[in-house]
Length: 136
Image (cartoon, rainbow, N blue to C red; front, side, top):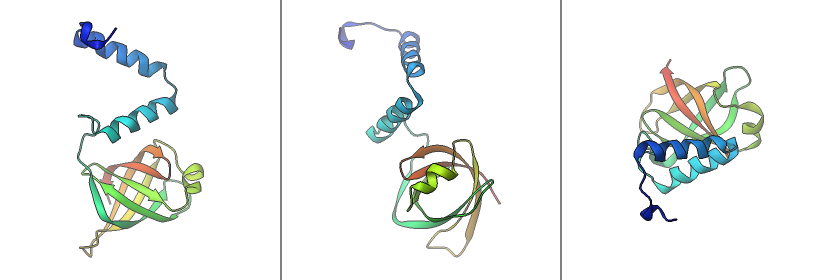
């Protein structure tokens, strides 16, 4: 039956969606989230991201572990960044969701170096999504 022929109230729709999502594996949930983010679905992102014309070089230090090299910021919002690594193997072994990292980067038009602590909220392909926590 098509959705046009069915009448649902908002609570029923939300409940059904939650049940479907909770029955998905973590991988399926991440895939769905990625699809919604790419579709531009309203509400898929809380804050607009700025895609940078030129990547910004960033140094990433896990809370416990060694500094990571070869990382770039591709997009940034007021609440976080997506950091892409040259070597995707660095992501597989060094990072996990919920981990705190220290980021150091310089905005190309500025001489100021930013040092910010963030929390990894997403692992994706060759990069990590980091939510800003506080500036050092």
